[in-house]
Length: 322
Image (cartoon, rainbow, N blue to C red; front, side, top):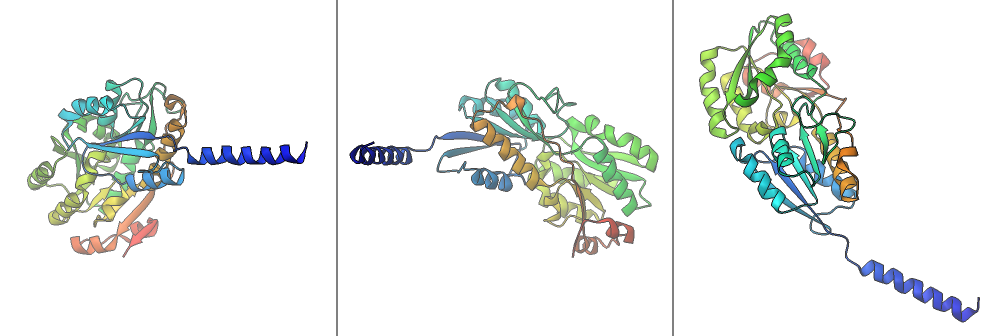
């Protein structure tokens, strides 16, 4: 090759690289739909997306929607989101995911929820199929039994334990507790909200003295996360020991939690979204199920409750908050 031709080739290559560099990155739009408020997975979710190169305000537009704690409005909310035709919908909680899936069979859905097979979201964790994938926050029904077992160890005299839950899901959520309750000689009592609003949380706590429970379990329903500070405050006011399903409750003064890591779940959701935005079929992406749980205890909360945690509980804790 002559020197002139070689120089022309270098100039052309440089020009092509310059044009490519000047071309704007492909724009994507995602919708984040929550039942109420914000959720603990959002910060790690967006941090991981940014690490992967999907950056809000640059090549990614994010629209947020809230069901405001009113399940009866989820269907209309899902239709509103689908009409915007985003590239992917992040659905937080089973009811939101079910409403969105009913509204579209084509827009990819990445959900976070509980027991997706039993609640009809997917036929298989390994092959969810259709237009949906995501993460489940538990590792099966035995997790609720584990929380009850820990609570009984912390409060050996407990015979009546209240479960803070949504009325619509009580039968579904109490089922995993039936056998552990029988073995531990505990009667589960429902503290049941009609909707996930602060006024409903206050109502059930105002009624709890009538049931005379010895301790409280807070359901893993994501709908409760937005009211976690209020829930912890009312538990402290009730002077009852409680166990929670998320680290976020500990951050606002909860006593104990046996929980999966929301950071891990948020990052896994971001990985799914990134794959989908780059052409992957959501139905081919396995549902992620956490395998690592952590047991957290809060000595400051115990002092506020006037409650002494047994040495065996402190010894088994993965983290003790002073």
